[in-house]
Length: 127
Image (cartoon, rainbow, N blue to C red):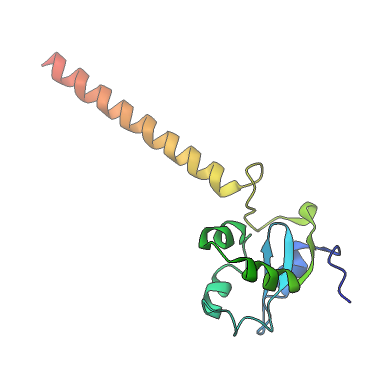
């Protein structure tokens, strides 16, 4: 019987995504999809695309059925040790590094646009 509450570190998860093995992180739970990957209706390549990230958002975006949720839960092998997270992008508003970087880039772009706009207006008015 698998202990679904076993803490799995990021390193352990990443190590198990080699040599045909496939572990996925969704909603802080770790799933061993090694045996299921060839049966996945959307193809195994979709699963491989998200094997080294938190796939929570991708899983939710697809709109999986209740049956898919049941299948997914049958492959759970533990929960992620959040204290061990270092390299993975985690789908959580408090820790999503990519989201913060995107906000910064957006604000920087807006600031540059406003600066250029002001410079154009100023140069037109001084001519």
